[in-house]
Image (cartoon, rainbow, N blue to C red; front, side, top):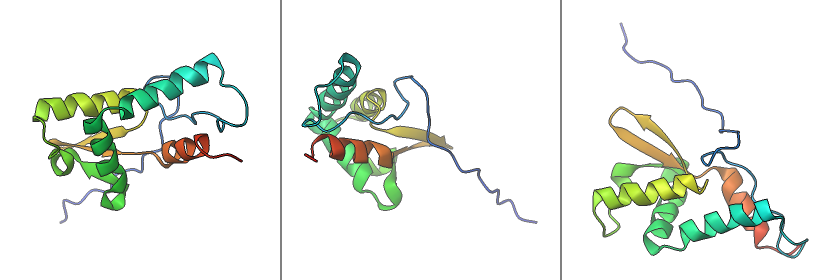
Length: 124
């Protein structure tokens, strides 16, 4: 008898909380941002403005399979509590989502976030 269990597929989170993933904004050249778009975009760029956070975000985004265990990305030159703090800030900015599996937490960048950020900086 097997102990293997199939895990359900998780759908991307939707909603209005800080951890929900929503498209950011139109391209900068399309029209001026609304106040809400400017706030959301500023949170994202502020979170990525820290070199440690940018390294963590890059490590998750470039990790095989599109997600990374915290155990695989924590070697960024700061202590584990500091890594956790920075990952929390990235989640609050809507850049990362996470899932606990046993004792480890796995992080992923939702494809919609990368697409939205790319659209923001392109001129169409």
